[in-house]
Length: 396
Image 1 (cartoon, helix red, strand yellow):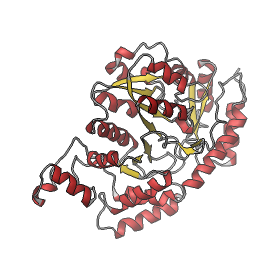
Image 2: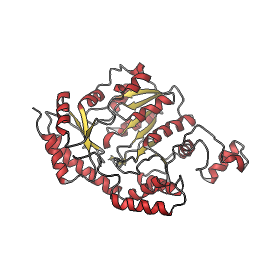
Image 3: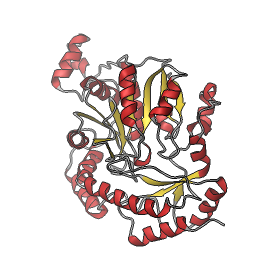
Image 4: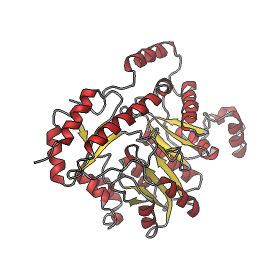
């Protein structure tokens, strides 16, 4: 069977040996210098000035929303738009932190929110922030969305957890908004086992993120920033300064092991992205031509498609169900991300006022008629041939 993920790490044996050596020689494994080293390296790779490493991509989502609230850039009760086709922990922090979560439909041929659909939602809701998911390594006209957000003073946050390395119009996804989140969970483009990050060019946001990540205290700030915040709150005693909590926070810290793995894996990232793109192009050209069975997926507007998994949107649920049966014991498949969030029980429970929005159509089709199979750098020629054969045969 061809699994979604074949290994925990790229170049797994060498990486595991390096981890063992690292653990043996380390005196400290809680957050420290290795995590900070990875933050600098990943921020540089993503071409952002600030990177905050956390224990998961979901934590990164929670932390950036809490940060914007702490800074007063958002307030409870504000309307926040989100990509309806996404993962649960993009939406849950909005609900948990007292915001109105407004679903925005996606285009069927890109699986992503477009400028057109964004404007349609803006005509009905006073959106203060857009939490945009760059699904599966794709995007729509995100440059126009970013321009619209700037013109209307709407905060744009990107979830780039599935699009690490994708380049659109010369710019990496994750660099169009004020901040973006990434995941380094097993099976994502780059694994630290568990891990995530927020990147930004906004130093004020990055400083608050570091407070939010660690209880609301200042231990992971620079000495200059520590002195500034301690003077502001008149914390003069070193006895109390280490246990003063300045704003709302959590414990979302990664470990030194995660940081070490991140730095180790980062050296392979260019190869990983190149291989994922090559795999995707081979598979897409062979499979998407079956237009009688599948809706087309558009990707020729993207410079580099750092594909996370290959989506199939069937023309009918009957075709999708037949494919699910055909793949049993041969290819591991999944629903596309978390599907249409409006179909999920938690959303219906907490956000029922939005449960019957008439403009959410495409995400519903993707939810009921879609699936994806894994794309990873370890797919062999035999794997690719098997996948092509499985998805190219007609459904009787």
